[in-house]
Picture 1 (cartoon, rainbow, N blue to C red):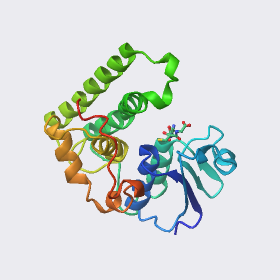
Picture 2 (picture 1 turned 120 degrees about the horizontal axis):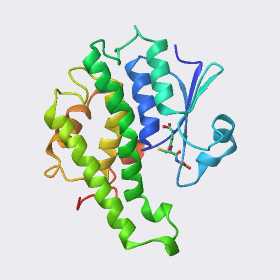
Picture 3 (picture 1 turned 45 degrees about the vertical axis):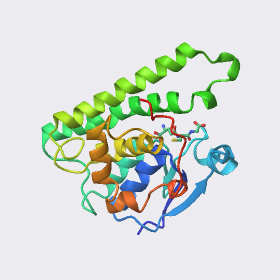
Length: 224
Ligand SMILES: N[C@@H](CCC(=O)N[C@@H](CS)C(=O)NCC(=O)O)C(=O)O
């Protein structure tokens, strides 16, 4: 069914994970896939650059169509295969509005988590400042509190309401990254409950980042 699809991906990348979850939800198993290492800078390899000139993952192709933006790929797959597998866009206008809002505001959490977790990797030593570290730390705390509040306020149990949707596809990989990097469940109980509720969902479990299995990341978020 999905032999005409190709996904170039990196393990642990929330953006890649999104596309993989949607492919599972839509019963599109059997797609071609190739794993690239960020550590070895393989995302800048010729093969990736040919599909995504920005040298970023995911790079996704269906037939002749290239979709390198994770959200674009997710929306495309849901629209193309609407009646196949699970529907990921709700009909109810209220839930639909929340779904789009949560789906796209997830980029703020991605940015802030990345700025904090990968500070040393992103910023050359001579340009680093304690004030920037503090600012990034505060920004990620505020962002996490916002998402904790969304779950507190509901309606749940999913991020936009009663059904699993593209907003969960968008945000779950970021929440999972936060816990992988040591976020404390006792400080963010709603996020922890959300994480525990979804981590065994078949589409998520079967696409779990391979390098996370049995591994422990640096506890970069343990004091947030
Ligand atoms: N706009 C892209 C962004 C993808 C993205 O930022 N990918 C990261 C991994 S999560 C990446 O490839 N980073 C390496 C780089 O930017 O050089 C999307 O949402 O799919």
